[in-house]
Length: 437
Ligand SMILES: Cc1cc2nc3c(=O)[nH]c(=O)nc-3n(C[C@H](O)[C@H](O)[C@H](O)COP(=O)(O)OP(=O)(O)OC[C@H]3O[C@@H](n4cnc5c(N)ncnc54)[C@H](O)[C@@H]3O)c2cc1C
Image (cartoon, rainbow, N blue to C red):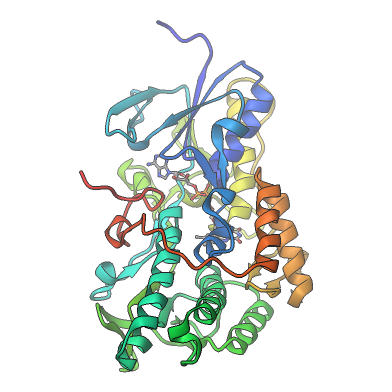
């Protein structure tokens, strides 16, 4: 059967892919078939993931239904593993391990990123990353379990090790995980008879750089450091991990920290699918032009974390891996895909950085919207308001969870559905929990 409408296949439904699909579905009005290939049926609002790990938000709150919010877009569940650029075909594996293919007239690659690894002994075996929902659910359970086991432990050394949590990487992910984490473990300790009168759970936040949030405005770093230190977090800059074992972490200054929890937030690398395509890359990101097109392949576009998009506001550089850019690039990609099909004119991607918001939990945040530095409860309100506005759905549900968290004690229960081996650090699919074959 021949296809009459051009088929646009978007691979990946994160910030870039979701926005691209949404914009195309609104503008194409049935003139093109829009297919979205993604391993799961939701758009994950990643910036609120630390709040899931800390038991503030239930996981479905930040998981926005793709079929429910993208009318006119056909969702295909699957993980792309091969792109045949000559045949214009994407091969994928669906959640029941069946193989499938999708022919395309236009392809938009928005596969995002995965955990970055460093060649540190023991880290791949003993650390867990923080990039997808399974890892956040694992961490929430793991923290709860460690506190419960510590509360029942007779040996004070074991109790101390189980209530010591080490976060490596003080970018926005690690800083938010530590900031929310310490409030979570304090809440769990208050509820546990075995911990209530003992020493407080201990959190360490390490970074090789000389300040927290090294990639952001220094004023945000100062605010974050003040808040974290005020909560008792042991902030160690200029420090890294030399080795990880099942009993703890050896730091590069020679200190051994007894711990059962190593949370690896050293950053991300582009999804390995990009590498498999044999096209030019820049530090693993697919090279594209300012119109988000892949040179030499006018029918292929890429954007978001997976693509090296020239930053026209900073000549010679590429745009950073942020949701702020990915979302806007998705919109421009949709416009340029439509233009390549003869509808409208293409536009180069250009966006001036609007600042950043780091939610520190409680009523604290470090933010610089429009480069105006903010801290304290006002920054927290602005940050939460921004997240609500930026989410494409589930806003009332998220706001309801925030309200409940403000008036009720944190729910300290572990469901144990995601096991340690389901969320290995070294994975090409942090968004999918590994299951036994
Ligand atoms: C904890 C955390 C907090 C963050 N907070 C902020 C913030 O506050 N502000 C900000 O600007 N940025 C933030 N970021 C960064 C931001 O989340 C990313 O830059 C953004 O998600 C990138 O969007 P993307 O569309 O390129 O990729 P993603 O959002 O990662 O989406 C990629 C999609 O592709 C799918 N996929 C991957 N491989 C395949 C494949 N082979 N086949 C099919 N589908 C595939 C994935 O399942 C996913 O749905 C944060 C990141 C983390 C981890």
